[in-house]
Length: 113
Length: 109
Image 1: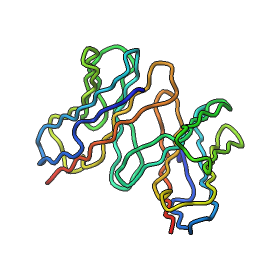
Image 2 (image 1 turned 90 degrees about the horizontal axis):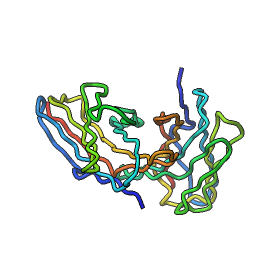
Image 3 (image 1 turned 90 degrees about the vertical axis):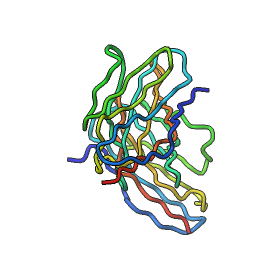
């Protein structure tokens, strides 16, 4: 069965620190990849997505992610975090052509001002 | 103009009751999902509904049933509620990416 692993369950940073959240998946074929963010008390919102093309994807709010096919990874990065980035971050994978996504368990990010 | 709406936002009820959560999307999408998010924030997909085809997560108890009166609506009906059903339930409308509703926090007493 396909799985999605987010290695960091809890991350605590100070403002202006750099961020990298790991995401690895187990599916061997073509995949669509997503990062979603859930701010406290809110619903999930799309940060960025990768379907094909340039493996370095730019998203909203200064986030980016890089798809490395050989490592089955899609890590999320931001060079300088802000207090307002405090949220849960979810990586999700859809095998190509599938309607059913698999989500990672999420990473809780706390940014101290 | 909300793309995906859910009602109610909060639902507090007693064990054994039957309740429904409604979801509506105005995006014209063919695919909708229901998710359960537990207290540890883990997201579990419960149902996928695509062009009248229902795909059920086999681990979901049959007390849960989705009902789709039309393409814009996918409601969740829960029979004989249990304490463990307490969670936040999200619906999502899907076209390439997922557009999530605001969630319904269900508390079973």
